[in-house]
Each structure stands twice: as C-alpha cells, then as structure tokens.
Image (cartoon, rainbow, N blue to C red):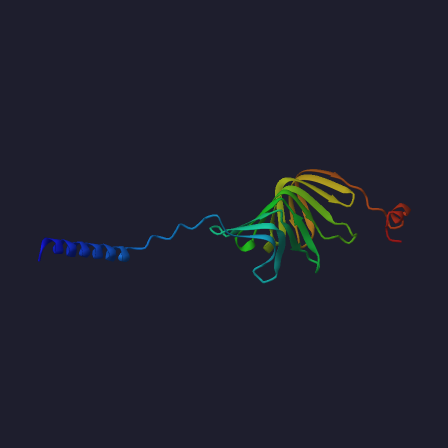
Length: 199
C-alpha cells in the first residue's frame, strides 16, 4: 500500500471519529429561566376564590403580570371588588398599582387608594382615601398605618392608621384622629325633606 492511500485512509478515519464525537457530545444546558414575569395579561378581568370556594375578590385593569418565581401578581391601575355581608353588595377599591400575594391571602394597594363601602341603612356610603392599604380576603379585614381620610355623608375624619372589618362594615381609627361631624337631619326636618329626605 502506498503512502498516499494510507494517508487518505487515516484522514477519513480521523474525520469519522470527529463526526462520531460531535454527534455523541452532551447537549448544551437549557437557557436559565427568566425570573421576571412568566406571563402578562392586558385588559383583564378575573376572580379569586377563598379556600372554601367562595369569592375572595374580583379585579379588572389594563395590565397584570405574574412573578413566576414568587407566584405573586403585580397590577397596574386595578379596580377591585370585595364582597360585603349583604348579598350583591361590594367594597369597591381603586389604586395606582397593587400587589397580590401567593394564594391571594393579601392584596396590597398602593398610590392614591380609594375604597368605597356599601351604603349603610341611611343610604350613605363611606369612602377611605390613603396612600397604601392591605386587604386580607380570608379574614374580611383591611388595614393601613398611613394617613387616611374618611368621608361619610357630610362628616370627615382624618387619622393615622386604620383597621376595617369588611363583613361587619365597621372601622377603627388608630391615632391622631381629627373629625368634623355633621348631624343627620331629623325625620321631620323641613330642610331635610327639601334636600331629598323621606316624607
């Protein structure tokens, strides 16, 4: 066998060995998972259930992003509805942004929070305004340690810190309370009747 043929055979063998090693090499590892939002929804509406299957809250808004690593949800300008004690009545809440924790146990509302309660027996709804508010749907309560303004009818209260019982529709102001109360017109008050009171 001449040297040219031997060199050709050795070269072909080396090429075959290289190809075999290339095919048998370990596949590259998959790309690292993106720790940012694993999905996002635009123009969404959703309902979250409690552990017993009853409604915890409803929410709608222009943007929802879910953190795949922490299983939390971040919302932009959301509108929440939390069920009240009376069937068909709700606590309506709006804010600039919100964070919903895993299992929907806590909802943190941030930036220009406004929460409107269901009307009381006099037909007056209460409105809470604050910079931040945490709502706990499983426990039917809400709270903040920030400054808060409460308006109900013509009465205005200001305080630092608030605890709300969503089911009982009662609230407690925690500190620095300043209040302006306007009495409700009596049933026989002529001015009250002119203003739309019951006859």
